[in-house]
Amino acid sequence: MLIVIDQPAYGTWAGREALDMAFSLAAFDQPVSLLFTGAGVSWLRKDQDPAGIDQKSVAKNLAAAPVFGIEAVMADRASCQRFGLDAGDMAAGVTLVDADAQLLSQFDQTAFSA
Image (cartoon, rainbow, N blue to C red):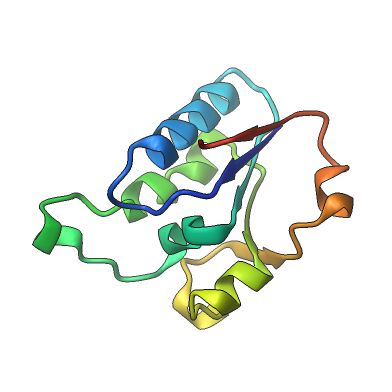
């Protein structure tokens, strides 16, 4: 299962709900990978401090992915470039990929965080 998070880290619950779904699937031994694309790559920025908008950082949520058995955390290379992120700006363990048909074909199921 591939969970695609294309929503920003703050301002909407869609991304958090998608992450919760990924954790739930993984907790029941279902193979799950995460792909962050579009505005969703904002989840991956290191050293976030959303206190100014009265939100908790998503970094702790994302850091739990290995504990739950999430197989891979990936970021769309083109989206990272568009939003000014490079590998040094992102949390550890994120793999840059090209979010294309070849990548999507590797998964039996795909769900989006709409």
